[in-house]
Image 1: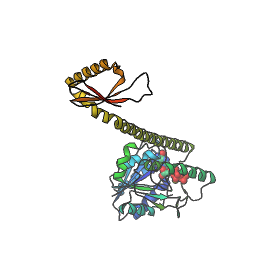
Image 2: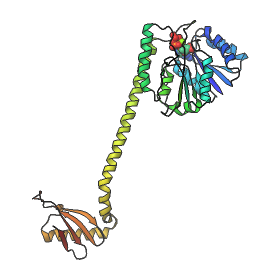
Image 3: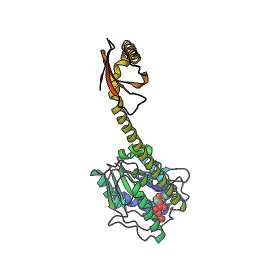
Length: 331
Ligand SMILES: Nc1nc2c(ncn2[C@@H]2O[C@H](COP(=O)(O)OP(=O)(O)OP(=O)(O)O)[C@@H](O)[C@H]2O)c(=O)[nH]1
Ligand SMILES: [Mg+2]
């Protein structure tokens, strides 16, 4: 089943036409439509509730105050029952027919299907120059934060497999307008994504909710995602470095522990070795600190002896018989 989320804020003039249109488009598709309205002063929630009385597949999720587009989508997704979740603008700027293609892509094995304004065949319409610049700059940065290559990570028309969405849901921070970017920054890099060209229409009724605040929140979102990506990399490098140190350390330590490990297991052998070393050191006039134990067996110990004062002299390898305390060295 498809769950389609329509976020609305003051869309009373648009949402009824869209719902009527969707009724025809989704006639043969099992679906539910959840309109998430943020207390629109123009009464959007009331007109949708009126429509929903006759159309049981349509529901209204009213929220108190204007909480933002991304969180509206997330609240809608969280309340949805479908196996495929989709979202589109409620102001008639998105072509409802494209919804069927996004849904078909998911049914054919895609995890996330996106309506793209920036791929061949797609278009942003007649935007003024500054909106074009802001959008393409934002898209440039957002593409670098997405874990899968896409042309339009900032679009508002997409469908996603519900189980994929639920698996990343705890990590999503739905601030601002760009929930698709948040999703793209958290899906696994193995996610199968398909983009379908989208021609973004001009808004005919009502007002845009894009404001300076939306742009500021977007800049914050990009910084936050970039920072957490950098931290992720540092942690990954850090743990690799730790692993290397551990491997290198064990390369030197394990053979040594292996060769003198017996000492730690048998207290009587330890005392025997101590006594023999002391006896040999006294006999040879060596300092105990110049003797390095290299291997221990129940019958003998191997040592390296360094002549401390003449440190350029290479150490001598010797062995001590533990029964007789006899020393034999290789020169
Ligand atoms: N629930 C909810 N919906 C919102 C909010 N802000 C925007 N929307 C809805 O999200 C959709 C996209 O918002 P728009 O203002 O159309 O943004 P846009 O399409 O990028 O901008 P325009 O091209 O100027 O229309 C519309 O359906 C809005 O009604 C919000 O704070 N809460
Ligand atoms: Mg719009």
